[in-house]
Image (cartoon, rainbow, N blue to C red; front, side):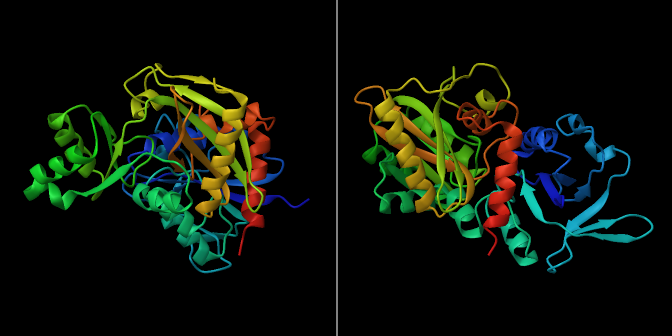
Length: 356
């Protein structure tokens, strides 16, 4: 059987750069080198693309990978049939690629930008395509699609950062007229809870809006849902499958960036501590969200299940979820009977199968 040439992209110009490095370390360590010729390419915070030929993938989260021996500038060519371009001091080499796994989180990686480059290049890509990635990354556009799909979700309000400079009081009045405190405030286009705040009064709402505006021009304000945080991993193209449900107990005010990646306050329960009937309905909704957004390959879909009444409320979707050793996406499928290396095999196969 011919070995596939697989390029794994990591890093990127994103607030989630460090998470990408950790995810890529896990992916690279779990890829079967008997099946794949692996070409790791890192994108620095400044946007420089570098080929990383080393096999010590622990250098990624240690952030010493850029100084490893043999590192050289690289780029994926938009010209069909070329693939990966490697620039050494002596020459430029062309390395054909069979598939790319963009282990990139957040903007400039999960938002359709890299997917567009790979579409131009004619190279299969793990994960949803340009349109699905872009719409899923923008929480306000996601909300519109899910409203149309009639899947229950939190009430929401769009605020633009341009309103804050001269009309802050009217914005605060508008939000307060619609919601009771507390509310959640989120940048529309970030993942991993970057820039997300919980506001309990007018003063903290103003601070939360300004904090979110640092990351995005569009800001989402949502009603507070008192419930368990439930996550479902979805895998596949035309006939997607949902994993068992997992539950996150953040151990903090909410499941923010620090709780996910820095401190050890959060606890994951797999399976989630919900009734089987509720669990099946959550999984059904997860596939409904996935298909409504026209996703392919993979996504993680997050919900709340209220403590009173077991009401299921859609929260958000992540089209390139975390793949660290403790991330929920691989853990949920491991609990569903698919080990990490096998999961990578399936994702690469779905990418090739889904090429248009």
